[in-house]
Length: 267
Length: 219
Image (cartoon, rainbow over all chains, first blue to last red):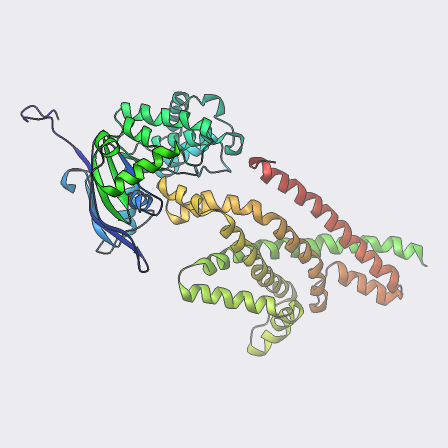
């Protein structure tokens, strides 16, 4: 598997999205969105509310189905485990299931299952959907809980946890699915300020470990620190994209400049 | 007052409750709940035909008297060649009736579960039916226990109507003893007392079930 003869290290594509488009009635929320994500890369999606960034993220997990465009998982969709979906054609349940098989979502409002303990929340997907042996799933869940410092909450119900703890469980629930791609939808927006750090710390560690991630966020300092690429969206289109430092420190587009300036004022 | 008669009447009344009222209630409620779940899902379906049939059924059941429904099944159906005994007639009528009312309760309970719970189920790879069974219904159950308990308690009392189609249950036994002894006041008050005791026991059970289902919500 090692790219011995390549002049440069081979870049492995995890996901390519081309020309994603979506409209709610006459409201075009996405137009011609292209995204490339390579293995181990962290992409931050930023932009004002209503810019379409959350819709892009949800499209990658099949929670929204775009009206047009394509999504390809794996290299060219041709190698084993590859997947190519053309949203312009009829999209079936199998396509959506295949998307969800490859990505996992962390929600702004955690969306933990309130009737299940922390442990059950985490092993539900691996055991019920992926049919992994329960003992293995439990051991994995316990290992992940220890990593995020929540071993003692194993048997607690979500309502007994703080927002920051619930979100860390949300992240562990996503990790336990062993996805190729982790999706974060404003993971700290619902948290009290003093709890934001814990959650961002966990995401930063995941980035360092080489997880491939797409993060919708308003935390620009965090994005600059963690993201390899930043994509700024406004009005359903990509306005500017590039290395995090460039887009956030020296934006070229007027709209990006305004947005970055406004958010920095808020801080 | 014929105290001996009153005391000795409790036996037949309780027998009527144990062999008539209670099994009739339990069977009708069980079938009714299954029917209600099916109708609730039909009403929530995006298929207009299914949801239309569901809405029509609920409308008919809630818009006509239970006594009329009971009479249509027991006295009406024989004229089109369907002759049912009192017990099956009563169970069918009460099940259909519970189905109509409980369908609306279950539908509202399913709708009360936040959309994010469906999405969380989908994002861990569950299909819609799997999400419904493992994620949504357990949460809807908690919401629907108080109104379903009301339906259940109403049903206990409504089964007295089965006396009119000759089902031997609590109230029919009371009527027969009363007619024979002419102690109407005593016998009907006794019947009321037995119904009341049954409902008191059910209310206590309802509280216990609610406490159990509430263990995962903040207080």
